[in-house]
Amino acid sequence: MEDFEDRYNFIFNQLVSNKEDLVGSIGYVYYKLNKVEYIEKYKNDHSKVPDYATLREWQKGECTKAKIDNYKTLANQRITDFYNQLHAHKENELDTLKQELDNRERKIKDKENTLNKKEKVLSKKENDLLDKEQKLKNKESDLKNKNEELDKLEKDLKNRTKYCHVKSKWSFLSGIAQSFLASLLFMFLCFIVIITLRGQTDLIAWITNFLRGGQL
Image 1 (cartoon, rainbow, N blue to C red):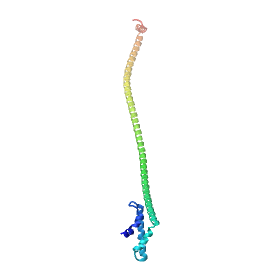
Image 2: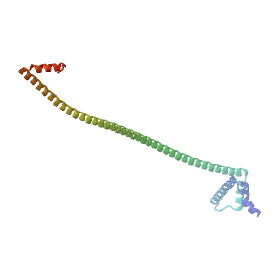
Image 3: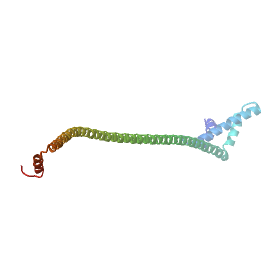
Image 4: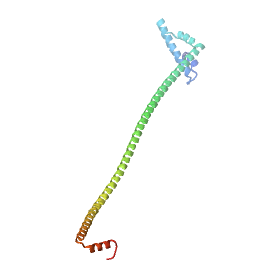
C-alpha cells in the first residue's frame, strides 16, 4: 500500500496543495506530459517500456525543487498566456463592438442629417406654399376690390345714362319751348311790322308805354 501511494501520489502531493490549486493542477498536467514523452522515448530507444525501478529513478529526478518550480512556472505562464489571450480576445470583441457602435452611430448621424435636409426642403416647400397662398389671397382681394370698383363705375355709368336721358328730354323740351318762343317773337315782330305799315300809331304808342312800365 505504501509503495502504491509513493508510486502515484508523491509528485501530485508536491505540486497540488488543494482542489482549488489551479497552478499546481496545470503543473501536474505538464508533469504527466513529460512522463508520457519519457516513456515513448524509452520505448524507441530500448524497444520496451521502462520497468518500475527505471521509472522510479526518472520520477525522483522530477521531484527536485528546481523541477517542481519549473512545472509551476510553466503552469503560471500557461495561465498568464490564457488570460492574455482571453484579454486580447475580449479586447478584440470590445474593439469590434466599438466599431459596430461607431458604424451605427455614424449611420444614425447620416440618417439624422438626411432627415434634417428633408425637413429643410419640406419647410421651404411649406413656406413657398404659404407665400403662394398669400399671393392668391392678395390677388383675390385685388379682384374683389376691382369688382367693387367696376360695380361702382357701372352704377355711375347707369346714373349718368339716366341723367343724360333726362337732360336730353329737358333739352328736347327746351328746344321746343325756344322754338315756340321764337315763333311767337317772330309773329309779334311780323305783327309790329304789319301795324307799322298800316299806320296804327296808337297801338305802337300803347306798346311803347307798356314796355316802359306805364299804365294803360
